[in-house]
Image (cartoon, rainbow, N blue to C red; front, top):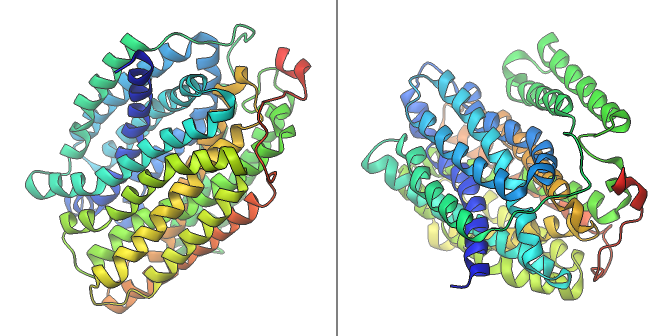
Length: 465
C-alpha cells in the first residue's frame, strides 16, 4: 500500500471505531438491561445518550483545538483515550458507572472524530472532496454492518462487556498506522482555545432536553419536571447562541452560517440522524421483542442494510461531485422512507426474506446516498483552513440527531407488556423515522442544484480574526 492509502485506512479506521461502538452497543442493549434489572429502559437509555451528548457537545471545540495544536496529535490522542475509556466500560460494576464510562468514551470520540475527517479532506482534490467524504462514510457504514453480528456473537458466546474490549486492538492498530503515515496539519493563523464554557452549556442543555423527552411519559408531559427540563434546555441553548455571537473565539463562528451549504447540510444531517439512530435501536427492540429473535439472530438480520450503505456511499460521493448534493440526498431520503414504510407492515410473524431483507436493503441504500452526502454538502463551500471546525460542527449535528432520535424512540416505545403493545410501539417508532427522513430530504431541496468546484470564503476578514 502507498503511504496515502495507509493514511486513509488509519483515518477511516477512526471513524470505524466510533460507529462500531454505537451499533454494537445497540445490539447488546437487551443483554445489558438483563444485567441491571434494577434499572428501566429510560435509565439505561443514558448508556446510549450519555455517549452521544458528550460526543455532540465537545466535537466542535475539539475541532478548533485540533486546528490550533495539530490535527494529527489530537487524532492519535483521541483514539488512545477512546481505547482506555472502552476498557473502563468493560469493567463497570454498576449501570451508573457504565454511563459515566460511556460519557468519557464520548469525550474521547469527540476529540478524534473531527480531526479524522479534517485530515482526510486534503488527501483529495477539491473537485473529488465528496468522494473522499463518501469513503469516510463508507467506513462508518461498514462498522454499522459489523457491529450487530459481532455484538450478537460476543453476547452469545461471552458477555456484553466484550463489546467494549474489542475496541482495544483496533484502537492500537489505528494509532500505530496514524503515527507512521500522517503528517501534522494545523491552522497557523489560529490563536487561543475555543469557548469550552459554551460546550458545557450545550451538553447540559441537550441532556435536559433528552431528559424531558425520555421521562415525559412517566413524569407527565405537563408536569413541573418535564416542562422545567425543557424550559431550561431552551434557556441554555439561547445562552450558547449568545456566547457564539459575542465570544472572541466562539463555539461556532457565525461567519460559517453565511455558507448556504453549511446551513442546510447541517440541518439535513440533524434530521436524518434522528431517523437513523432511532431506527438502529428500534430494529433491535423489534426483532428481540416482537419477532423474538435472539441477540445474535437480531444482529445478523440487520447486516444487509449497512452493507448496502457501504457499497453505495463511495459511488454516491462521485455522483454528488458531478450532479450536485441535493440530486443524491433527496432520492436517498425517499428510498430510506420507503424502507421504513415496509418495516411498518412487518407484522408479528417473522418474515425475514419477504419483508425484512428488502426493507433493510432500501434503508441501507438510502443511508449510503443521503448521510455522507449531507456531510459533504455542509463542507462544500468551507475554505480548507476551517475544515476542522466545519467537520466538527457537522459531526455535532449528527450526534444531536442521535440524542434526540434515541430519546424520542425510547419515549415512543416505553415499557410494553404485551406483544400487541410492542408491535404497535414499533410501528409508531418507524413512522417517526419516516417523517424525520422526509424532512431531511426537504432541507436538502434548499441546496444548490450543482456542487461548486472550489471553496470561496465570503468573509476573509472573519477567517483572519
